Image (cartoon, rainbow, N blue to C red; front, side, top):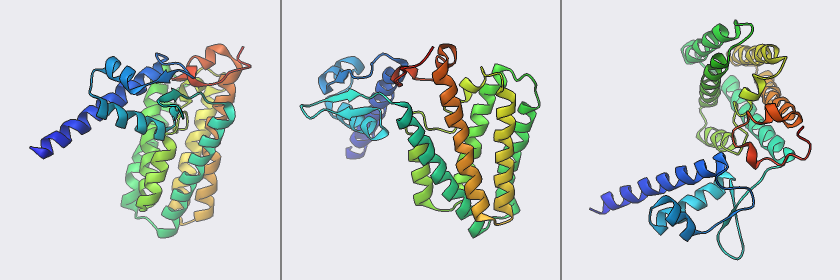
Length: 251
């Protein structure tokens, strides 16, 4: 009976977390808006304890900020905040790639990555690339990055890569759809895919420093897409949860 109660509590916490996150990312809750436990209970329809846990988790994700007087506030993010998060993710992915290279991986371990590369190759062969292809790329790109982190065989590193990737706007595919609107969209995808291929080659050849540097450089493509989004309103609107980004200069 106690186990069922625990499972029910966890389920309600997850439900509350997902519902609140969706409200934040969709703009239903605006930057600077205060959220109290009672307000969230009324909005989501679950009890107070799961809501409290959900709010704490969203603070850990970086979407909320605790208010000293009580409750939480929806955070906003500057360009510098996002660039720092992208740089952090790239640094950790570089570490994962270096560990994979230095510790050595088998050809069999690399097969899923090579399969992913082949599927991405089929997408980037299109010119121009369709919106549907960009959407498919988002899924494959996320898989490639997850597989790469796993090759480190380091539970702490994998956990920290996951945490960094979950930071607002820091995921490997956070700005891919912005990229789809750029004149140089195809060129950027080709560069990204070349990075993918080079890091696999470096890991296979046990070149740790090379693998690390290419992943750090790879993350900076997301920074490039962010800067492009901040220049033009039509591009900026393609960014999920764009309402959370401070945009003094978007035209």
